[in-house]
Image (cartoon, rainbow, N blue to C red; front, side):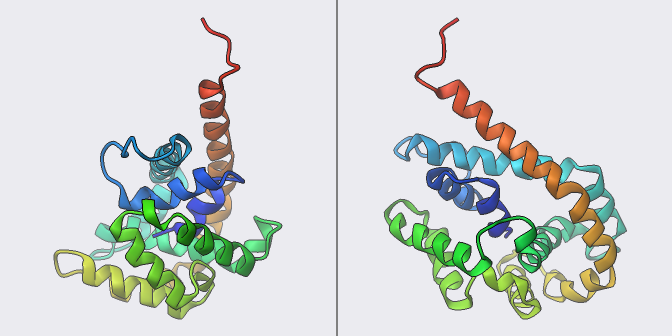
Length: 205
């Protein structure tokens, strides 16, 4: 799961960031009991996923993967992009990676009462493995793939994904450099538009 990317792309709004991280654990219509901005963060997460999956550079990266890995290319690339983001975090944020990572986990713990059960379990895993900062390390990526592989319902090659990604590492860095700035602009524009639409000062039509 690309939790680091979703947290960063939510910008400076803690509620939007919380929803962005919750997005992988919420299906269907978000609970109306959640704060409005948290619900917006869940929808932002989904919009980011759609943008990423439809970007030509990402589609090309998926197509480069050979069977049996191509079937799981979306999962593999999501986690690998978090690795690339963590590995070069100063290029994308003025906040040091460990500070950002620790702060995100603290925000999740503070909001634990509203977290889905799956995210509560994942938060314990994040604490144990120093995530998302730990995604800068290949052994953490290998561990993430192993865990995802175990959770999937059928036999799969996800646990063996790191060598496949390393073999395409240079091209994937190019993919990330091409699409992530566009994704960041998209996420910022999406959030700004939703804020404008829900602002109490917005003129009626």
